[in-house]
Image (cartoon, rainbow, N blue to C red; front, side, top):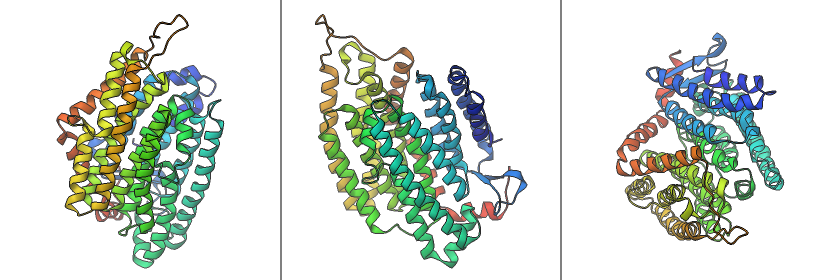
Length: 462
């Protein structure tokens, strides 16, 4: 039944090619059905699904555990909201295809299909990022993504040639025992590919043009659901299957990316590009935390990831539809924007505060003072440009030809969801344990390769 999360969106995407308006109506129904299926199957987590009755070592296999469940739930909830606020019917079919691919990326248990789903996500992302004013940005994204995918494919070939199987659990176990150096080489190749989508400098140089000049939907989709699903795959590859650190150059590159991205955000004169650089800094912080390979730090990184994705959803939705607004005539939207930006910085009573507090606490406990200092410096820079843009948004004068202040605001549905998202950040800020318990569980499961392997070797099924 879990296969429906991939099959149904993909089938309906092709079936509705001649009927774009119908696709726009079907999209939220499909995503809602995904969520119903997910929660119905919650009691069955920790199972593998062998497609076509082929053994997992040879065939296509899906893996549905608690980590996959929570990532799928978050991605599909965000996707449901995106499908409800999207007004441009041009993107309904690409979004259906992307939804299938994101679900597949999280569920797949073999290297080749993860490559296929990454490619499908990339292609739909290129389509969504296309805009008449963004041809150059989309082309940059295409070049970066196209070259990066080659590295992932080479890594998958290495795993297959040495391990004799594309299944992640079997191949990682075999190669880890016989040739751990090759395993680390493959991980480097995988990391190069994923760091492009995770927006780490210099791999993320495409981001400012694509986020700042693309369609209103572009940063909302790429900055929330795509980034979250990519973090899942990166976490699995670097934490579950390999008991080794990536070469130090990756860690120091990511640390530099945090600071440089924040400085880039500070010096931007366009809100869209500012948020693009801020998104790069946030994802770099998550990646740096994952690279520590310390369970307590990884847990807080996931807390940071989910709250940051929610805040960025609000900020990018407001910017994508309004640009520089005048919140004095759009107070509800302005409150949502300000709440989310304050959460981004880490102001107390908002979710982002606990994300940074828990992260810093874990880093100091692990005596990782370098990353802790980088996060603190990053936060100070972030505070400067968030304050600047809040003042700009609340007091900007967008005048009509008659000299009156222009009264523009989000449509009702968009306004409703950005406000609800901002309030969720406030609720998590007041009751952080609600999310922290889940991220602690996720971190524990991500490090438990023995459990992951035993499920496959025991040939569990659904």
